[in-house]
Amino acid sequence: MLEALLCLFAKHFICDFPLQTSPWMYRNKGIYLHAGGITHAAVHGVGTLLVLTPFVSVTAALQFALLDMLIHYHVDWAKMSIGKRYNLRPDNSDWFWILLGFDQLLHHLTYFLIVYLAF
Image 1: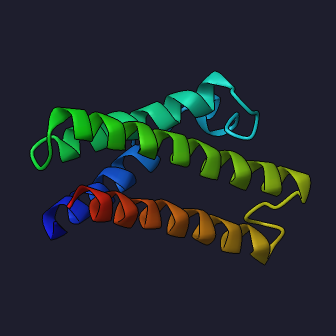
Image 2: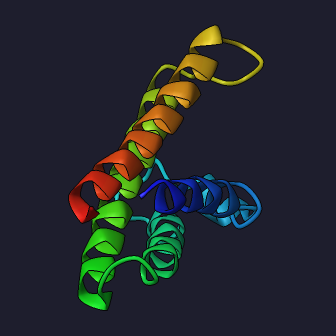
Image 3: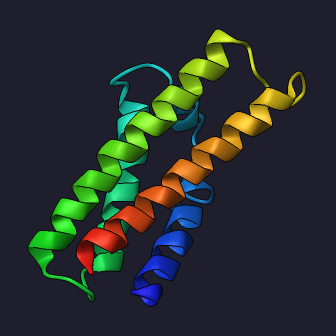
């Protein structure tokens, strides 16, 4: 269980930072159903599938990957929408950083939920 959680945390870093370098992806996550945000969430879903396959059945891994993708998409969309609405940027507001931290907290709580449900 702990190994799966640690792997999901590492997956999160890889998918949220090194694999999200395209402005097309990160600038458009606040536009509901934009392909950039969907692609970013799908990358997370594939990562979750790869991480969980050694621990659970392929069917369960697919279900958790889809759950992760859906939650990740909506958390990112909400963060970007709030940031855009209130013009929150790293150089103009402490609330930008609070919102970013809350976004990351929700993603990590998602992994706790997945591991709880899987094991």
